[in-house]
Image (cartoon, rainbow, N blue to C red; front, side, top):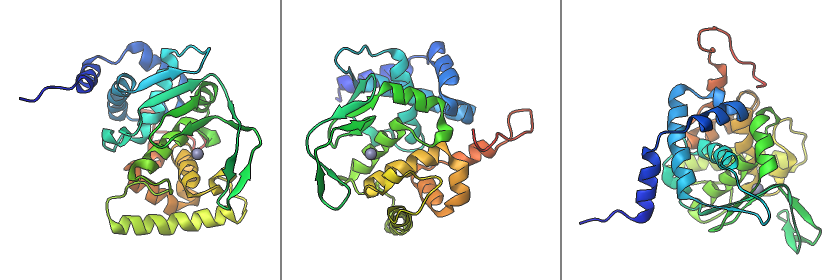
Length: 269
Ligand SMILES: [Zn+2]
C-alpha cells in the first residue's frame, strides 16, 4: 500500500481546483507576457501556477502583507521558465520571501570573480539562496511584469539561478541532456560572457551579466524571455542554446499573426 503524502495531496488538490477567473483577469491585466502565450500554453501555465502557489511556503517581510495578487504574479513569472520542463525542476525552491521594495544588505561580500571584498551597503531586488529561499521585491516584480521590453525581470532572474543550482554548482550551466548539449552551451556562453566581461557595449545584455557565469545565465534568461525577437536576431547562438534548454521559442510567439487580424505583434512589445 502506498500512502499519499500530505504534500502530494496538497499538490493534487490544488491541481484539481479550477483556475480562478480573478487570477486570469489579473494575469491578462498586469502581466504583458500572458498575451504572448497560446491558449494551450495559458492553460498549462495555469495548472503550474495553482500547484506552485499551494506547494511553496510563502513569507512576507516584516510589516508587509502578502497578497494573492503578489503570489499569482510571482508564481506566473516563475512558472513560465519551467512551462516545458519537468515541474520537479523547482524541487529546490522551498520558501519565497516577498519584500515590499528594494532590500539593502550590509556586511562583507565578494564582488566579481577577482576575490575583491566590499562592505558597502548593497541594494538588491531579489536573491536566490542555494538550498534556501528566494527573495523578491514586490514593487520590482510588479513593475517588471508590466514592462518586459526593458529586458529585466527579477523573478525570472532569481528562478533562473534556482535552475542553475540544480546540479549543485552555480556556474551558469543548468542540467543539460547530454555532453554535446553541454559542450555547445559552454562554448557559446563562454564566448558571450567573455565579450560582455571585456566591457564591450551590449545593446541587450546588461553589464551585471559580466559579474560571473551564474549572473550571465540569469541575465541572459531575462532577455531570452523578455526581448526574444531581439536576442534571436542579434545573438542567434545564445538564443538557440537557451531555447534548447528551456524547450521554448518565445520569439516565435511574437512573430505569429494575431488571431484573426493577420498582423504581427511589434517586436518591441
Ligand atoms: Zn543574480
